[in-house]
Length: 79
Image (cartoon, rainbow, N blue to C red; front, side, top):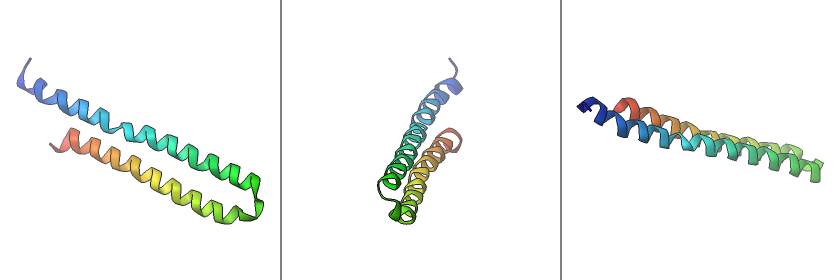
């Protein structure tokens, strides 16, 4: 193995592990909107307020995925 291969292996492992955050974010978004559907089905009068909370939860879950993607790119191309 050359020196280039030995430096590339930890980068690929670290980049792959940091993308796990995107899978967790997908699950979180599904939970947020599932809870929105359940909440609206129980109480129609709170639809607007629950939708605002769902959008906030979506944004926070998506931010986690973007931070994970940013870390993957930093690990692969920054160092």
